[in-house]
Amino acid sequence: MELVYGTYTPSRSTIAFWASRFRAGRTSLEDEERTGRPVDQGSVEAVRDCTNEERGFSVQEISKITTVPVASVHGILTERLELKKFMRRWVPHRLTNEQKSQRATLSRELLKCLESMTRTQLGHIITGDESWFRLSYDRSGVWASLRTPNNLCFV
Image (cartoon, rainbow, N blue to C red):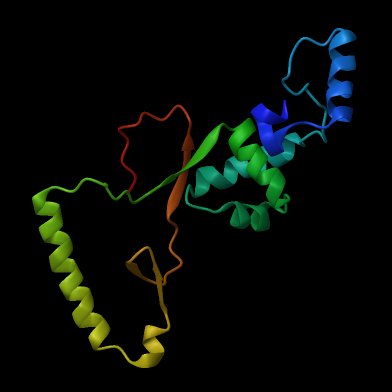
């Protein structure tokens, strides 16, 4: 087994454990359903109301508003309400010539803006992957149903 799996080879005790489980009648490698702490229906309603009021709230904001723990809020959003956070802005990887030209124009405008900033103001800019972004705390995504058609546009 070590020749095939290398460092990922399970230990003898793990193999013995699973062998005994299969001899006892287990037929699947998938995890069995486990009962966890039940989610209070009031918490589900509070989270639903919060997302209906403002789709852009983060999990942390919903947690503060509803006093439901962050992990529970995330579970309610994704499992109970079947919501997913969709980002509002999408940058295509394959740009047309017009889009490239527009990016170049915007980059020149940003460069002029950066050149006029003081050293202190420059400290408020975050960089990553050769991209420059002005630091702001606007909401960057919205919670939407997993059944939302792919052609929806979020503004």
